Image 1 (cartoon, one colour):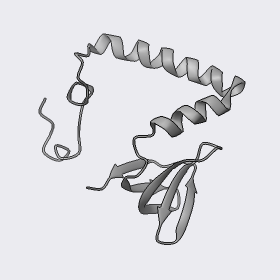
Image 2 (cartoon, rainbow, N blue to C red):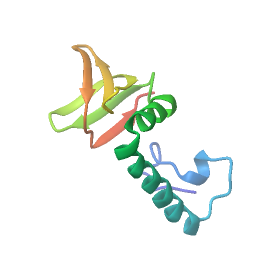
Image 3 (cartoon, rainbow, N blue to C red):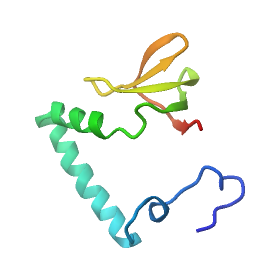
Image 4 (cartoon, one colour):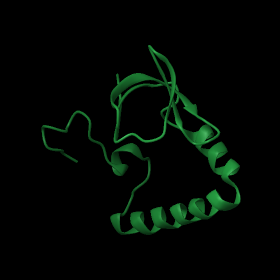
Length: 107
């Protein structure tokens, strides 16, 4: 799959990232199903949701640049807090990020 030049160096696709053949018409129903299951879990077993996020967070250990309401921050992701915040180690120390508009891996 070819992407426009302005995003070619950062863009990807499910097909490119997966070892499986993915059919578009199957993606949204599966996402909604899994989201619904996790959404119900938040009220019933938040600890299990957080535990799963902590185990599977692909950002942990990576250097990132992210955009928050207070501006751009750069650092290393240390994981997910028990409250669900993204833990970012910056030059100023450890920050708990509640919301980020954009997260980019730095290579």
